[in-house]
Length: 234
Ligand code: C5P
Image (cartoon, rainbow, N blue to C red):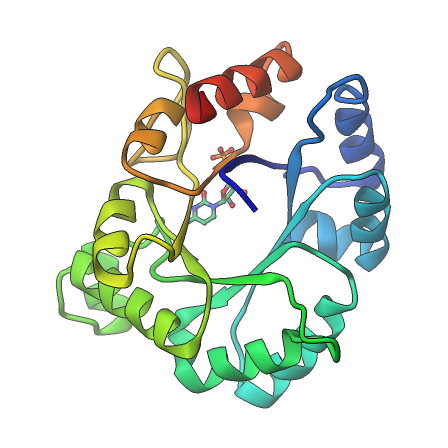
């Protein structure tokens, strides 16, 4: 899979997400879609099948984190959904990440791409130290978790666009970086604190950008999507 813009479809129901995706019916390029916890827990696996059947690639963003055996079995279920990309928390340890890969791999050897969350972008140095008792600088923690994900055999990490270059340096340029926190230069940042434009994300080497509200909340979502593609890919 090449570089792409992934639309975060953070909608509460089937009806709303399908109404949104219907706007893209005439587009030559079917958007790559991210389905998160809200929609998945509301509508269940059927919504994944339905969107996949419409021809979209799917990033299933469920961020698994549990004992290795449980994650392996859950991943086995997800591999049957034929998604393209899924994820887990690197904090679950290398053993958990390896078990996840085992569960995700189908009998014919194929599997969706698997990436790890290092530290959530909502976690800052202070909360990491006080709540998690991790006293290293956050950049070092992100780098270490990315290296552990690579050691476990994963394909990449979710990280802030600002961490992308550092992760590539530590893990190699083939190691995927999937970056949320993207905003247009003239747009609202909302609750995202460390943002980058699609053009900047391209510059620093992100493989996929995850864009939600700048597209889903736009007056013309199709135009906003096209603008993202043009800035990120061209
Ligand atoms: O609307 P917005 O562009 O901020 O959406 C970003 C998407 O990426 C949301 O679905 C959010 O949950 C997700 N995400 C994030 N930061 C992370 C991991 C995921 O913003 N560290």
